[in-house]
Image (cartoon, rainbow, N blue to C red; front, side):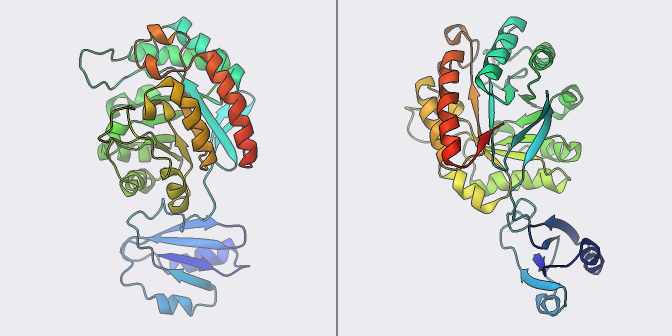
Length: 341
């Protein structure tokens, strides 16, 4: 249930009013809009009398939320959410008119590799460095990442360049190792790992949540709801393609998910054209399409020697190709009224 307070109602008045609602396990979420305060009621609101609430002198409007996701719903938070992390010289942002560019290799292979790529993507204009230390692979015989050693190298690249780091967490037993990671990625295979989501909800660290291989948008938003129910609102949704009967591309990039998610939720939405297509030559076109569709950013795989990459070289851009893509994305961002941090 959503309660929109009248214009001019103070925070103190709204909090006093909210105290009368906190019964029978109902939680009240505050959202400060441009002109008014919005209260979101979470819990069993079936016994709450909407007509009585409407009669209150502080209340403008009462809306019952039909969707199963509450905190992630745009009705709860009409203004979009911006996720910020500390970076060298200030903050790096995704959302709120800032186009966040995350770039780096699929997996960390060596110190020279990750540091060289980090320097290259920063020079081209990336705001964040991605790189896999722990790699979930379909085959048990494929390269699984360097593990803790890869994480150390990733953090060394962060120290060298000042770029905030994005990397995937596969299990809660590794969570303490991610203390210096800026954004924790929950991969497509773990989107509905509810034990992991609950733990990350309590951690308060920003989470990049990827859509599952065959998950609906509602299921993605419900996964975000798990994080938010634990108290973590610093969430970035990621469309990375879904499975289809067609195997020409690695997955099918659902560009329509971007405006759909933006309409339903206040959380920032980014797109991963690398995993979606699996083909490096398609990445620039899909990245531009994502920005044109209203995405708040893209996450792109970049490798300094794709032919020799230990993981997903065929979908990785070279640093030179990434630099050209950034030139194009700046123009698209200008058209959309956004800027690259």
